[in-house]
Image (cartoon, rainbow, N blue to C red):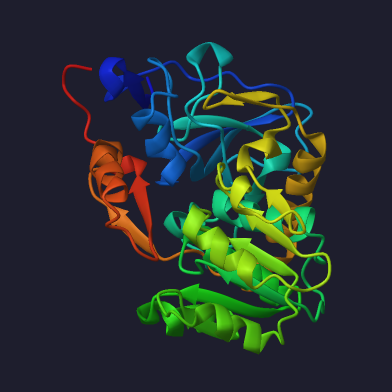
Length: 353
């Protein structure tokens, strides 16, 4: 029987044998080979959102095992694909997270990746790239790559996973990209396409951004989205119809009324009504339609033509057995400009299973 890392009482993660998940007519059954860790994974466990019996995890890369009769995309068995799932849902919902040997996903919400991209690197792409794309293109209305927008865009927190994709996608859309990060990350972020890299710790960073943009900036993506970052981001948004993308809740009160907040939650791409951390979210079919369009752009153009680089990978040992260590590293802020990735085949099976 396949293995999964299941949440049990007292927020404990337990490696267990589980049944093979069922798939619908539009779905793919995918054998997971690699899993990339995201902050939402440990938060679901730590804050008690993942109930006993649930499986957390979002980002995966794997191989197609079974194909629903109505699945789009002309997939064949054995193809390498990547995508993300909504991990941490109550087990009765019937949706498994990525920390398992098999997942099910709508065929329209996965994408192929070329052989030049390793499977561990491919696992870093789905969640962070769609978050960046939702903010830049779907919410703020910038043109999809490949375009020539000729707009200044500020990416605050460029060395985050989302920030790295936001830099690349904004550049591919023809924008002039300003980003903030520690000085040690500047050369790397310039290699991703950033035109200007500034130190967010510099007391003059706000005035520097204003000077670069002639105090006429209208587009910003706050990849940190805490009260301090949003204050500084809003301080430079003095252009026409200013907009800021946020990726975490509870900063709306810090945003002046003349600035439009574009709040992005990746889970909306699944097109379902959700209750997350005691807040109800309506189904947004338009977000699912956008994700399908963007993932097709990844498959057909951006990845085959080497136009989008995955996050840097740090491979964690011991497969699913190493997830708790990875959670601890992330909770203690010991991860910088990298993505922790787990290889499922390295999981050590307890003899008691």
